[in-house]
Structure formats: structure tokens, C-alpha cells
Image (tube, rainbow, N blue to C red):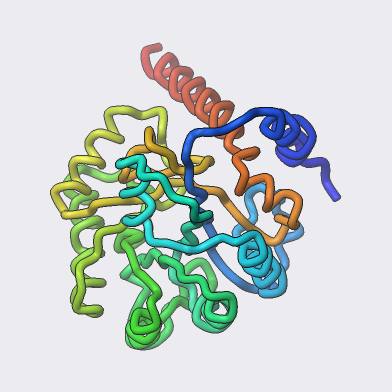
Length: 287
């Protein structure tokens, strides 16, 4: 197994430190899954893997149930955080990006088994009447989406074509966020208020963040998630909530640590690195 600095720091530095503290600010973990499959990702560094085996996923939900967690919607989580309403519940939001069909086959039955719900974010260009492949995997069909919705699975937008939004014009970005929302609402017959940003979120680009926030608000979105690592809290941006990436490499020790906040530290070095890259690119452009 390759050395994982993030794991070592999380389990042997941050976790012991958090355990020594008394009390903490209210926060809610939002888990970020992608594909539930046994696909081999051994050639990919553990941090960047996006698949979780069905067995590992079942183990993680069993762990959540055993620890007394209850799943909730993004809207409910945001309401509690913004109003700072006290609650004794241990809440978790479970999300899936990309709308892969293995959610229907492997994730949904396990969610039902352990009494959890989830929000699935759909790139609507790849959701059709028959399976359409995205990144080499089939996505859900609209019939499956409607069936899942009847059983309490929530759906949000993951844009239309899953592009690098920061590389698009403002008009193209608006089309991506508006048309994807409209497609889901048309097929489900109910309002869609959640959005998931595709790819790495450009948190250091304040101008882009403001533009995208304005676009999402005009389109009618009320909450959203990003790939910024951490748990959501009262200071989180409602449309760009932090999440905790989860994959096959998350055994119970690391999974527990992430839920407890011991993985939140990684957001700061990532933010500083992005800022440094952005500054270096600006200097090269000025030359």
C-alpha cells in the first residue's frame, strides 16, 4: 500500500487533537460518492479514486446506522445550520455525483436496507430513455430516476454536459445550470433546488465564484455542493457546501475520522496551493 500522508495526519495528528477539545461548532458531514462498483482503481492514488465497492459501501452504511446517524436533505441541513437550531440528532447528507446506473443496482438497495436516503446529481445530457455512457459507464435512465424518486431519492443538477464551467462563457454557464434544472423538473414534475459543481471547485477565484453564485440564484437554486473538503457549518456558502470524499479506501477508522471532522484540515493546504498556482499563472501572463 502506498504511503498516504492525508491518512497519517488525519488519524495520528488531527484526530487525537480533536478528542482533547471540549465542545465544537455545529457541523454536518455531507458525503460525496460517485460510482458503487468493484471496478479496479489500483493505478489511481487513493485520494483521487471515485469508486466504492458494494461491500465497502454496505459496511459504511452499517457503520452510520450503528453510530446512530440519520440521513437528511441538503435543504434540511442548511436550515439547521443557518438558524443554528439545536438538535440531538446525528445528521449526515449522502450525495452521489454523475448519475451512474450502478446507483440503481448497488447503492439504492443498501440505502433501503439501512434506512437512509440520498441525493443524486445528474448531468442531464447523459440521462435518457435508454442508458447513455459517461466516462465509460452507463448512467441512469429517466424511468429509473422517476422510480427512485418515488422511493424518496432526491435529485439535483450536475449541469447538462459536465463541463469545466470556469472555461465557459457566462452565457454557456447559464445554459448549463438552467437547462439541466429544467430537464429534471420536466421529468420528475417537481422543483429542483440543489446543484453540484463538476470537477475541482475553483475556490481561489473569487470573481468566478460570485458570477456562478449569481447565475445559480437567478436559476432558482437554493443550495449546492462543491468538492471543497470539509463538513458544512454555519459559515458555509449555501450554494458551495463542503463535502467529504468517500471511496473504497475509507475503512472504518478513516471513515469515522472524516465524520468527526478530522479530515477538514486538508481544505486549507489545498486552498493555499490553488492560490499559489493562480498567482503564478497571473505572473506568467504579465510577463
